[in-house]
Image (cartoon, rainbow, N blue to C red):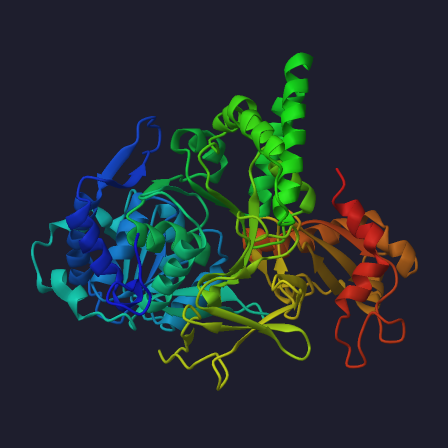
Length: 604
């Protein structure tokens, strides 16, 4: 969509409801939202005109349930049409929607409910409702209404979603006219280093500044398609599936089950596809398996085409001129071999393929480049409302291993200690406080300290080299505060020390050290003889630690759970270097000394 920053056509001067009205008027018959009901093979589609009517009807329904301007409303529904429509309907009613991860632990759900002072929550099914029912009677929360989409049970305090459209016309239908670009459009909760979720408050102006910057960075056709498969609780999917589609009048395809993505992609064939590294790795594994099964004569043709694509990509990455002969060879290889191959997995129309949330292994990037897909690493935070820097497909505008160049409207600089600082139009408003206030999170000059450490090369590319704040980012793009996991493990008296590990990995593992004093007493009570080293290998001790890890996992959300662990002999101390003088864990020292143990935990 056309946008002119600083003019009347600048989207940041508008609100999301205004863009929805524009789409319904200018593109009434274009598809807005498609989904498949469970068990169906056919897609159901809403046009932009019908989508707006559904949103306005729902806005009246939520207002009738008590959703007032400025109220925070919590959603836990997965990737389904009711989620998309409800999110926009609540904005139209003047409320502020927040999506809660469906994998959130009960304690996290309760924290968000109390912190946001939400009076209304909307969930997808009775299983999700079970996490919320107790909060209705909890005097520490303001929760008064629980809307359930599938199989609601009024006896359990559920309000049926199906009744929301039965309220009839009301003034709430026009509340959106009172909104300004500086009203909050959402609060996205993100984990801090303490493990307590923090609510990043984001305005209409900030999400549309991000949309404008992304449009300026990549040339996409009008009304592109997008597959919504990542959690809508993450700022990236909210941007890609809710805010950008309103700006671009694009077509959102709901994929309720991420495991079904490989089947959905060939049907949609999106022009822009974003995946966390784990998604790109799994897709690459499927392609490798298919290539390995090809007959030898076909495999050799594919191998030759991939060599040409690799050579072509290398020159473009370095910003060097591609010889006419190589350009022609690459064109023929693409048309005859690579594009038909990509069509089978639904990536033949992709104009921009990008990876976010965690560093992408260079080997995976080069594999996709050999197929003619230049996967561009991007970097950003919830607090930057998505992308702050990105690599671009144009020659000389990307560097493998870097996170690219700043998007329009964002400035990047480094603090004295190398911490990356951001300033610009799409930086969030601040963190929501329990009293409803939102103080700025930037300094007096408008700079936000990201907690990431990096370097900027001579061409302006940003390279993230470290993480100042101790947050694990799994290969699936999940942010996990290690202190939360470690402290939960150490609640069992036998576990004296713990280190959670999993940055860039598909799951978490742990190194555990038994508490020497507790271990001796515990063993004596059970008539078990032996010293600390011997006891660590005793079957009863191992069984008890297994139970301790299982109990901790039951209290953690899915991404935070420990899949495998190793018991170590000897406690960590300041004298041996694993702890600081103030007895804080020196994480990198432990990881370096036990690199082989950690590697073993990821071996099959």
